[in-house]
Image 1 (cartoon, rainbow, N blue to C red):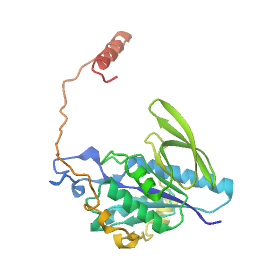
Image 2 (cartoon, one colour; image 1 turned 90 degrees about the horizontal axis):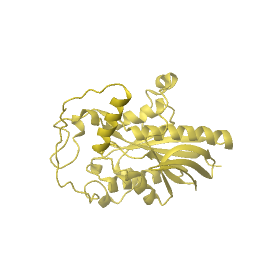
Image 3 (tube, one colour; image 1 turned 90 degrees about the vertical axis):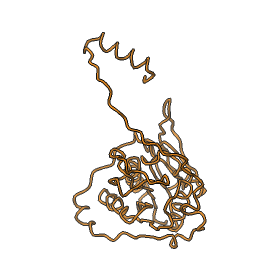
Image 4 (tube, rainbow, N blue to C red; image 1 turned 30 degrees about the horizontal axis):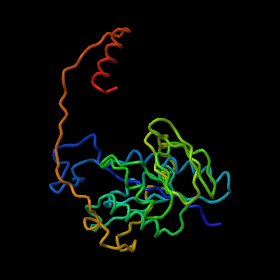
Length: 272
């Protein structure tokens, strides 16, 4: 049997907790140089689910399982590949090219799908539900469509996994759902899923100098009209800088009457 291949799609995103006046460019794209970069939180949870899945598959089916992380971005995005390896991933690839610049979700999902196809064989693809810099939750489903594989969204927990199928718990607005799919399948992981494991000291030492492959647009053999700004029908109409101002504070009593009054106020303001 071929090596079981799990792919994790991850993104290095601007830290939206530190957004300043220079965060946006005039054309509506993010000025990434003005913001510190972090591992997208939902993608980190997707990495954890992939690592858990590797353990289940290896234990139950006695096969070799490889976890490969793919990210699209500038060369510094290799930082999250290395971070993934420190936490247990087998390796990763950065796809980086100026011709990817300005990609919306349609162009991004196309580039990622072409990179996955270049890998050749794959069985499972995990990615976060959404990225904090766009909050669209579109890239995962669009990538599944371009790969022509089924998708399971809002995944929260692995129930069972074999070399042929996977069963997952999904988190929905009004409850949970257990779903099963044949492989290959793409899974988007909900933000309520288990946090990723910490770095392993041995891996930090042994893998800190590992070479990380970097593919250009030429390497994934794409239709260049579907990349970057050319392949992105989404256009930014207007940018508005919203500054949240602190209002006056209120004090409540810690007794039942005080709590009841707070709940009534929050309900009246439609917060509850």
